[in-house]
Amino acid sequence: MRRWLVACALWACVLAQSGCQTGPACGSFPLDAETRRCMVSTIDAMVRDHYPFAEQKGVDMSLFFKGLWASLDDAELDDESFVLSLAQSLAMLEDGHTRLERYRLEEVGAPPVKLALRAGQVVVRRAAPGVGLKPGEVIAAIDGRPAPPVLRSAFASAERGASGEVLLLGADAALAGEVGTDVRLQTASGRVVQLTRQAVLHEPFIRRFGDVGYLRIKTFGFIDDLDRLDRLINELMDTRGLIIDLRDNGGGYPSVSDGLFGRLVAEDGAPFALVDRQGRVHRHMQARSRGETYPGEVVVLVNEGTFSAANYFAHRMREEHRGVLLGGRTGGGAASPDRGLMLVDGLWFQVSTYVVETLSGLNTEDGMAPTIPLDDADAWYEVPPEQGALSEEQDVMLRRARRYLEGVQ
Image (cartoon, rainbow, N blue to C red; front, side, top):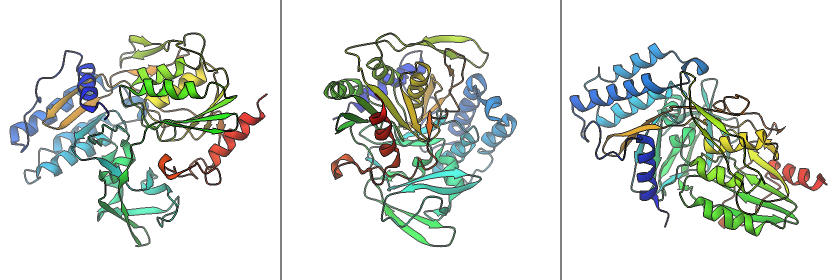
């Protein structure tokens, strides 16, 4: 069983920086007036002190703070509605790391569909075959609620399951819930599609396509991931080329992604800088060469769900000229959320603190274009490994990556 409680405790210590938090900062549920005011004022102070992307993302901070404090004006809001109001205010920052995060005991799942917010509308990014939805289709409502505000709030509110998954960030959180329960989507045309939530967690795994290896990594979010990745890479050392699939990898520990990168290079990687909102360098992040170096060519599959530590890994690959990125623009979010605390029992708040900059001074927050862009990068739906072999017929990115590696002499 994955060591979720240990991981969460260690991560809390790292984020708080002043030792592990011994109790919630503001109280517990149910939320009285004093607890609610404490929650709002705590979020206000942490964002004012640390949030580094307001100018970069064109955020109207006056409007943000006004909306945040307005959450206290409606005394009729129940606790869940109050928390949702805070999440919707945080969504205005358009920052995947600055968010509320709720801890749950049941396993978190999601239906076989991906959504995105584009031009103010919620659209289907992709869907599994047979679910009755097509890419580009507009979703008007989720479980009877207007879809755009539901999705906006999801960008600031993610949930963890008992297994410790850190995948359900951003748009995916809008459809998250207990495995086996249903979610109802209504399209703009009025058609209703009911889908069942499925388990989203699966371990990294490998496949072979002749002399080309394939490594799928869904998350860097577990403290023992690097041991797993080392074992898998060791099994692929004899391949001529390697496809690393980071599509919809929501990130996790940079130490894990740096450790993976260290298996691909014979020399230490260039230092990346953590820079605060005043432009001061807090510290440097460096990926050290480690173990036996994988000698073959590398293709990394990326898309708009390649976020946080996965986006950071993609930038390292580009900076070091170690391989090519193939697919769509990465989702960005390589900020460092080094400030966080438990607001009330079961509800964590964290804020982006430092910008990650490459050696050349490139800000990694907004993601990056791939080396080989594909217009139909999202014309794909992942087949869980337990359901059988990967389907190149439905996966244009995988097919293109294989063709590229087979053409490299």
